Image (cartoon, rainbow, N blue to C red; front, side):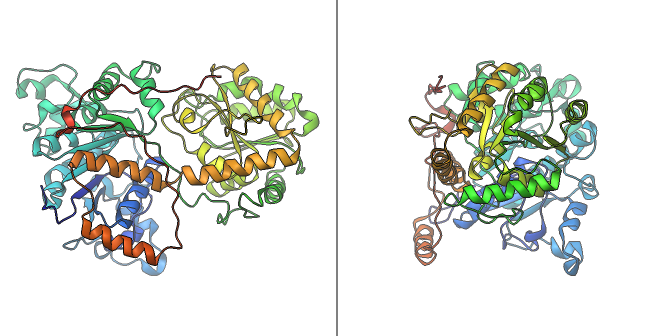
Length: 553
């Protein structure tokens, strides 16, 4: 739908999970949250930023009744239908199907259940929510929305597709039909493994790839890291299927793809984090982090020593991606090499590799030096506030949030130079007072050991030199890694796709007056690095060559 230019264009955000919604979006929106990972935070932050700007933003999410019920405070456990009733003009739209009603978590169940949920969600969005909302632009997130861009293209609605994870599902097109999605109008805009001559043949024998379809059918695509996008299209990651790599490469060649970094939730702020024993800012972090370190050591049974260098592992213990084996190979070497310095390592993470680290600790009797804990959000926040360094030796990283959080808390990352880690970490030079962490390029245990040695060299500097650099890194990170910066880049994309401003002049004037009143609030925004787009139609851009500077040492 093309609204008059005196009206703000309407944006429909379609996401399988969201961490929170702005108050006022719909009846009971304060309590309608369903989050499994970073996608929930990112979706919520974008929705909040657009809503705060008074953009005409609408949200479509599955009706997770049991999950929503669990979010309600006991005094407000009213009838669920009353809480979620959608009144005319409201902006929250729930996809209703019994497959969502009784789930304990967003992605509970196996692959068959995941596919059923995805098809039910997309059926409701395509058949009911889009016709009701009549958006000017649709923004879809991840494989669970992968059929919608093709439908949007058929309806003449520009669609942005965001790839958060390189994960997909496939099913026969007949399965989508059986779940109530009439694919006939848009089947040629889907990615089928073998393109048939007729729709009847497509229904009978051909598999549709959800993620590849989302990329293929969308007018514009973004990943959540510029470098990860570059790595994928260059074939750096063998786990990425040929069809997804090719479709992303096609979008990049057409100037219709970019990378936009995520940002951590605003609650990750050492000045306001209620889980810290001592809150702090860049100005007083040295004393506060020592007190937080003692509190964490006491809780986990580690040797209490404020001068002990503390390394924190914040990511899930998944050896496929996160590089657990690299640290396991050198754990004894690291602890023994810096035994006199009381070096300590804390894991706050779930995952199948946890047992291996526990066995190493038991075998060597490292219980006062290494703590392996199951994931707990409060404990993880304590660790951010207490640690000097975090460990992220990931084989690949589509974006990564822990490294950003760590720098905001004054903990420097030790990481493999890949994907979102490359985009957010610059190798530290004490002499030039540049950089914010320690990167190793070759993915092996000796590369990680070298980076840990570099970090320990920094830790042994005089306090005055070291603390000044940490304070600088904290200030830069708070200014750069925020949702305002990410939202601004998405707004730029929306406006390029719509070929018009997201906000009318009248609305901008009203917001300007409001900002004068609320002048106490300050958002530091990092300029976006969206691929320039010119021309009348987003699908017919001249190819743009995007160069990634690897900053090799």
